[in-house]
Length: 344
Length: 275
Image 1 (cartoon, each protein chain N blue to C red):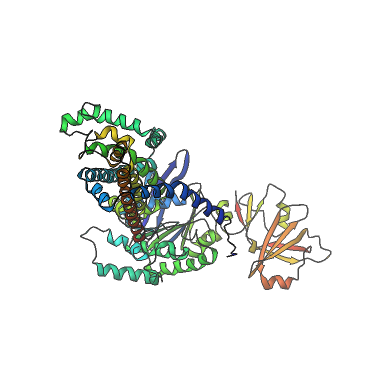
Image 2: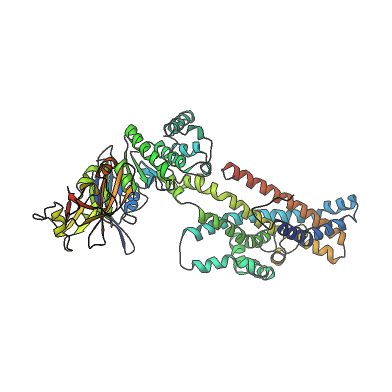
């Protein structure tokens, strides 16, 4: 295991930030710590880095116990949410910092440092900015410089706190792909913190879902999406329709083809793309009406209402399929549920 | 000239500034300059090269400079403690910093003289243990000027330290820097310009300080006589031209020194990428 965390707890006053967390991350993974704000994900990252002390529990990096080691001895690379670049140094000096502060015995020669820094700047495709100051860079450029600076010390693990949080949408999209490719090339075990489930699913090879200081589920993105461990994960990852069987949804779901006979719980979650709709004949006794629909690019999201209910049900389908149905607002539809998740 | 400006009120603002500048600053200063012109260049030169005058210049500027630098170091530490740590009585301590601003300087001077004189509380202690006399010596002048200059340094550094992004320190530590390296390479360069400003303010105030100094100085010609006192002495002897000659020289020297400090500050800012 490259990173191991054992029974970590952390309190801030009466608030429990982390509640007995244990986590193992194998070598070479790119892991997302995903959760709503205040779930303790950043605290966990900072404890792994050594920027924060846990109340109890141990941290292991590459099998060595580092719980009592200060951050400077842990050989980690940390990328801060707001980059924390040294604003009084040029881009070059920022990246060179980690190499220059090494003890004299370990310090590289000036020529080697120069080469190394320029190589790193080329890696993040920003060598042409080497004599600028951080204030003169855009957000995306600062982010990449912060990454180059962290990589300069050849860390055994790379930790990123909300790496795309402060960037605008289009830059974020580019950087996600770029980070994924960079990780593929470097193969450094990496953890990044995010509250954006889409980002986690797109970038990470493993996703750890946190809520209220506990781990809800850990797994590959497809695992987490297809087999959510509980209602929180199911609702947090992707879109879902929630039906509570205690409230008259029972008959309706049976009509939609969902067998409630061997039910495993009372709450049903249905993904929008698992609902198939068809136009019903004029004299049908269908009791679902198409209220509205939205264009989401390649998908169409259809908003449905059951007669006598205020709550909407959402279904999604590819564009061309929707066109073939020739549906209009106010049409009655039949619907079929292909797949559902049951929770208590 | 019918240029529209995004910020309205340029003309009233600049007019007010100019009127203010002329009335309060330029007229009094030029009056002093005119008075000096009553003297011939030789007479002016004779006053300035007078050994007693030169000694007082050395004492005034020397003590002010040393005091400003010492206040700079202490002020930095105090500002650091106030911003970074919380301790009981912090608010009271914080209010105490401004006391030298508010206290009548003569009161400060008398208190300092009483405590630091050879028979005073601290004066006696220092005298007995090291044989060093503080009051009635240039050292006493420096002490008084440190007292006066300290709040200037603390209040200039404090807001800059407050705004300092502590994530930069964490970043330095994560890159393997020791606490000392972090301080020297990351914190200091960011706080240095403000520290220099604080030192410059303390120095400017110290050079002209009169009230708090004269009681502790002892005012011995050639030893502990400051320039402002010499000016008063000349005035009391109805030597107005002599007094203004010294005053003008002091003004020019102070101006040159402040210019130098501003230049130094510009250089530091530029070197650290803050310009």
